[in-house]
Length: 232
Image 1 (tube, rainbow, N blue to C red):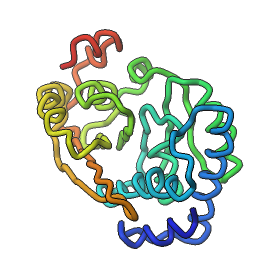
Image 2: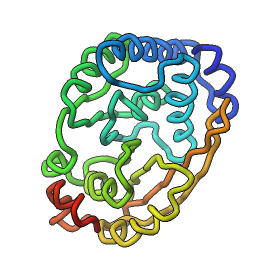
Image 3: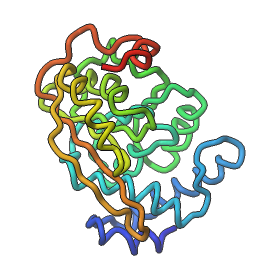
Image 4: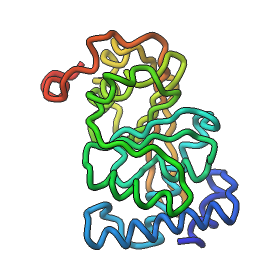
């Protein structure tokens, strides 16, 4: 895992200290150990964890200024992309949000042992937004939901001038087109679409950066059933 990270980081490019690389590897080891009793990841080869979890997420660090920002990872699952980015940019103020309590409990227990500071919250994003509207500089999501759904869950959390960054596949043109109206309604504007190769692989991924240019109307986000049934 460590050698794979050392080989891949220059391709991003991103320079990490030995301590940061060690912290990533410790998180990867903890992930794989817990994965034996809890479904956290389908990726179980340590080298692939380094590539498809860590290097993939760290590629986002070149797309936005993250240092010193209030960042929320919506639907973080086992802590991606927020945890690797927090390790790479220690002065990020990170919130990890997921609806599955077991995952959040594991993160809440594991991260302090690794010296990684993050607020770990178990809640549904549309409910969490009720008390945290326009609180964050950046919202991140690697969740599998379509962009028209993710935008309604994430953009209300972002303050005007901030950004929502969604990790997508390079074949997401139709998904982007379908989400365009909703992004506008929610106060966003697509600022950048960046396709990149995950170092050490022939896998290409896409990052979509949506800038928050206007406040989100107060009726959003709606209840999740409504969001899923009738996406904007």
